[in-house]
Image (cartoon, rainbow, N blue to C red; front, side, top):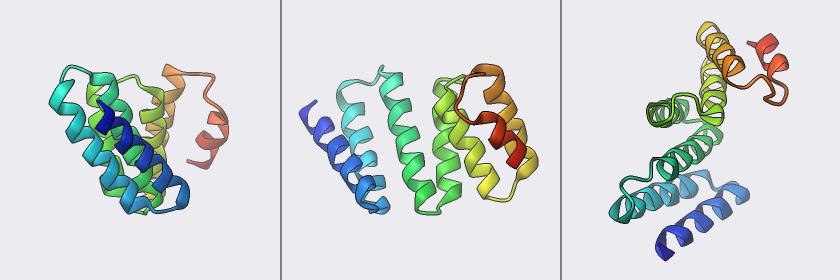
Length: 123
């Protein structure tokens, strides 16, 4: 448990410093450690996947970010943060039609998501 927490702290610190590859590696290590003692903790896995997706996105590795978002959505299909990040990745990867559908899906799940209407217009 302590190693998982250390990995998460290291990942967040790397992200804040703009070292996205290091953050991706730290989140991956955290998920590996987490699997060892908390296999049934789907929420923890989902949070880590979405956080790692944000790192991939900032590093411009949109395919990997999209894959992490999709994995998180397999665990929790209505998780707003994963839906939003998935839509952003699609939009940035030049898939506006799919991005619009993803933003609309988020709208059905959480109508109060900040600036969602602005994102819908951009898509």
